[in-house]
Structures are given as structure tokens and as C-alpha cells.
Image (cartoon, rainbow, N blue to C red; front, side, top):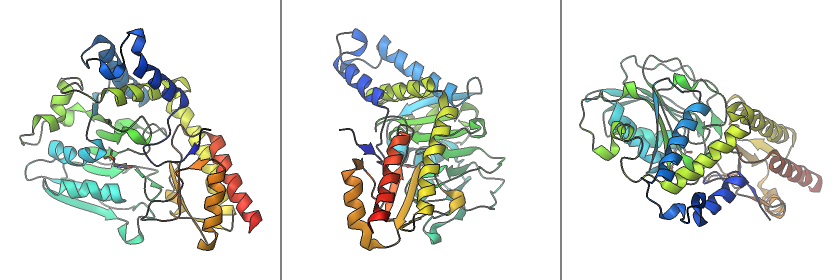
Length: 356
Ligand SMILES: *Cc1c(COP(=O)(O)O)cnc(C)c1O
């Protein structure tokens, strides 16, 4: 039986994406060939790449606004260094907001390239909130933030008005909510949180910000090279791009980001309401910054852990244990997780209350 999959990543994808991906591995487009054995330069795959790139711009409402879409390898972690390599000027500086493990990973890599100003950090409170009221240096080459903190369960509900290029790691909430994406100059996201299987990283970049650093950038790490080659500078992650395309097609079919945002809000409401109502549980993140994607929560009394764990496992739930840096539980509710799966979890929480 299919589990209720709360995995933080790689994560649940729509069932039809699994089915169509499986079919394409056996026989892609009735070609008599598997998608795993065709050239990335073949007509059929170039069409996949072109459609995926176009659909990203369409869904983000960025068509005709000077953006290019890339599907790269190396994970979001490689973007931690590609961003400063491509955007931080020689002797320049970059500004970062430290909201969690991934943000601090990005900061660590930026330091290899130049002065890295951390404008604010919530580290001393174990990243249970998003810092506010900070100042971004006007002479920064860019400002980097993380829209959703996968591990700690916090999410930026608004973004600062900046006069420098705005860069955002949206790995764990891309395509989950309506934003004015044209405020951002560069967005990146590992596919495996909300878009596809592991192995591809999405980069959406406003091309006018590129080529200004005065650095020599090795070709494979140079966004401009990838843009010029239409994301085919070298062999792209063919299968992850195809499965991502299927997810994007699914998203468009159900009504795009505006439609999925409503479903995501309903899921988050259902679970947070129960966490706040049920005397056995408490949320880990400060309320106003709670993530609609990764819900972190704890038992008030660890003595109930064994019972609760047995109950949710018996209900067919998978992937609920929290990250070791927060403990407790983390319900990752990415786009493809149905509302019914959240109801199953809420039912188990209520059952536990009755059985104590
Ligand atoms: C998972 C994650 C990453 C790291 O992604 P990789 O693809 O494993 O390198 C970076 N940022 C955020 C916000 C993440 O959730």
C-alpha cells in the first residue's frame, strides 16, 4: 500500500509522475528506446528541456522579463559557491541572512570569495524564527536569503525591499506559494524537495546581473556559459529533468501555483490547528514564521514517544521523525502530499490523546 510520505527530501511526487517516468524508462515517446539511453542532443530530449525551461517561467510568471532557466547538477549545495563565484565582485562583498543550516552552508562557501556580511542570525535560538529589522549594506553585490528552512520549519513570509540583486535559495518551497518572483534576481532550488527526483538543480537567473564580477570563472561554474548553451553546456541530468517536467505539467494542469497554494494552506492549517489544540504536542517554530512546507513539532512528554511512533507507523505514515538538530517530528508537506494524508496524521494525534 502507498504510504503517507512525509519525507523531507527526496520527497513525494504526484503518482502520475511516477507512472509516466516509469513508462519513459521502458519506452520513451514510443521511440523503442528508454529515456535513459538516448542522446541529450536528440530531438525528443531537446524538446523536454525546452518545455521544462519554458514551463518554469510560465508558472513563476516570469516570461519576457529577462530571465533564463537552467537545470544543473551538483545540488543546491553547488549553488552555495556558484552564486558568489558569479555575483561577488573581486574585492566586493555579499550580504547573507542566516536562518538555518542551509543558509549557514551558503555563508561558509561565500567566505571563500570575499567579504561576507551576515546581516542577522537566529542561530542563538536554534533558528526557531526568521530575524527581522536588519539592514543590508547598500554596497553589497547581492543579498542572499533562504525562503524556507527545511530543517527548522520556518518560512519567510515577506522579503526585504533591496536595492541590490536579491538571491534566494527556494529549495524547499519553490512552486508552493504565490510570490512576486520578479523581485528576485536569482532563484535556485534542488529539485528533490518539491519538483522532481534528486540530481537536478533549478536556477532561474535574470541575465543582466551576470558577467560583472571581474573574475575568471571556470566554464562549468559559469552561469553565462550555461545560459549561452541553453542549459546543455554539458550532459544535463536527463532523467531528473524529465521527471521535473512531468511534475510541472501536473502543477499547471491542477491550476498552477495559486491552486496549490490554497491546498498547501489547508494542509498547514489542519496540522497546526491540531498541534496548538492537542495538549500532548507543541510546535517548534515561532508561530508567525511557521513553514507551510515543513512542520516541526514535539511531544510535551517524551514518555509518549514509543506509543505515538507505533501508532503513526501503523497508520501507514512514513518519514515523520524530526531532524536531529530539532528533535521531535517534522511533517514535510510538499505539493504532492494530499490533504487526506494530513488528516491521517491528525487522526493519529487525536487517537493518542484519547489513549493517554
Ligand atoms: C536540501 C536543501 C539544500 C541542499 O540541497 P542539495 O541538493 O542536497 O545540495 C539547500 N538548501 C535548502 C533550503 C534545502 O532544503
